[in-house]
Length: 249
Image (tube, rainbow, N blue to C red; front, top):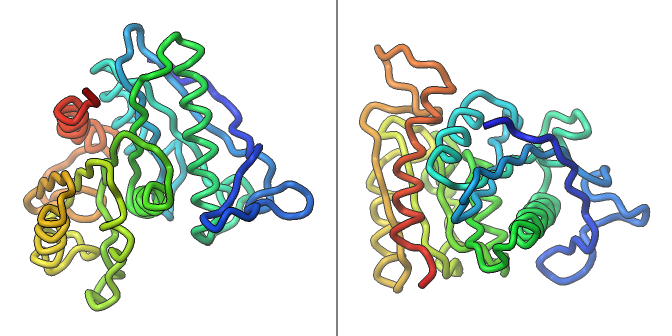
């Protein structure tokens, strides 16, 4: 399917504390809106909102391939850029700005579902690395996503397992799926993520974990020549299967 270019504005954006994330000029992260790419297949039964990683934007072939394959299974998709990409900056936005952006993207997706006559359609959140982590922080702070799918969760900085970025995850009530490469330096040693998932499950969370042997943080596998588009597409089936298994009753 062809994605439609859209604009996502920050009307009503607020940070977790309830005060506006926007500045005095009404801008969030220095911009009034961000670019998005939206596609809704006929008969869509869910929407998946997808955020990019820290070093790429929404048009990266990995996300394009992933979203195309998700759409082929009857799921609408919305990709978007964070404000720092919109403004041409190098460094990612701070969490309050990123979370406000996630809220705006979610509300955009919800409005499109209502327009399509599906006001109760589940809206899921997904993201590559930074984008997925910011999605989980938004959900922990109240974003009513139906579930989360992490495309390589950045559990800690490479080589710094003691700096775990997981303190908010017990506050996520929605189902979570981790897709992770065994050779991902953001999740080494692998046992650290295994233990986290076990703790979350013990606390009552619905959590899926799928390790991809020999894959790195970009899900590339040494010795296998695949395009980023194909790599992204290869992850779609696992995500859609998890979405179906955890669809609201």
